[in-house]
Length: 231
Ligand code: GLU
Image (tube, rainbow, N blue to C red; front, side, top):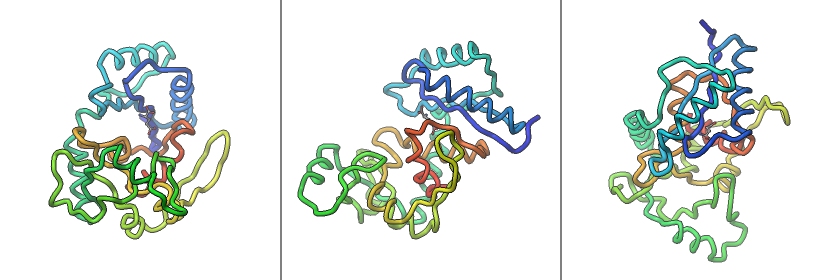
């Protein structure tokens, strides 16, 4: 039995694993071994258009081939929609969500209008120009995405920080309010027709599974402040 150290490998079954995944998985199991903790496998299959059981079966095969094993049952995000719905309701109750009807085209058009000094793109893609901010959750319809009002979330959350312990850099990251508001912006927490998003599901499940250390690619480093503010 391990101690309180829990980490996870959380691939999306939308294609074959690549070398980066293999490196990531081996790192997860190595971190757990060093800490005497537990390495979990989690299947991040919220994208019902792209995730398939065939790709999932290949993930299991590749990980077995790498000599890795994990506690069963494996958590699948597609089984967790009720938990994501509950988290959205809790966030809505704190007044930090709003429904958004903008299409990608609307957002591009709003962003291409001249706005001096406004960043066009941040770590989570184009920074949402805020067109629907101010709409209330009471008027949310099935065609709406749900966004986090980052300004309000920042005021509620206080300091957002995390410790990076990677091969490139080690140390404390503190995400300043201006960065979160101006360069990350009002991220989508529930996509249309999906009821959740990468950011929301990861945060809810890391808490549920008591994950104490996240191992992920540097490409997702910038997602970590978003997850910390949601936590
Ligand atoms: N599911 C994500 C991926 O396949 C990784 C999850 C995470 O580390 O947050 O890239």
